[in-house]
Image 1 (tube, rainbow, N blue to C red):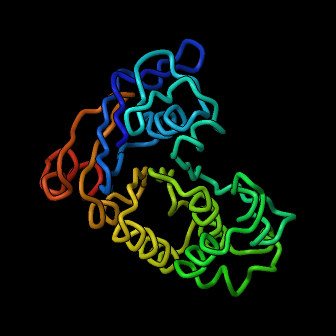
Image 2: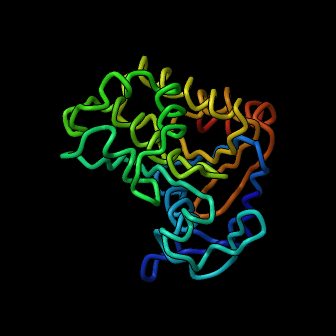
Image 3: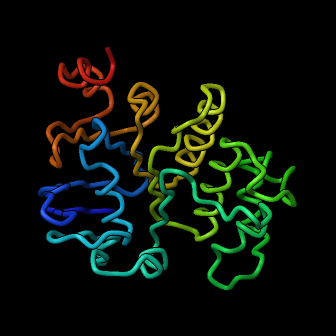
Length: 230
């Protein structure tokens, strides 16, 4: 589904990502772990078309997408939910959701899917997004991504800045999406919760993948235990 080969990305003279390989299979749920500054978010931004890589390949369903614009990456079937949510504050919940659909028109089946997954969004569908809580905005950001019918959903730090109870609620919804067959690649600061729900994981350090394996194997990895689960 999503095959990343030898991906490299830079900011000026700084090599932020160096030769990263990822293989996220259809229907799977993978997590990318690492300390702040390890290159996780740059990797996701490079995959999603927000940052132009300097080398390597990114293929979605066999199609090369590493040189496509964000809009074309979305059309190819990859939806990215960035850190910080970035909802359109002056618009209502429903207007935010409809912005993501290519036609700009309401798609009842897509809205129903989002509202079933996030009932709180349905309750607040006419509320201005900028007045919502951080957790509600995160739900809206994920819902907006789902309005594009993605083959691959890519999430950057969905728990960032949220209260523990809201984190649990958001992750319950992400797990439900996976149960429905959604392919997911996640960057998450909370390694314990990420490894409890995903199938496979990668650990980044200084721009490179240093450990990878099943979630169960990573839970027993000395490097992961010491750095993220102690």
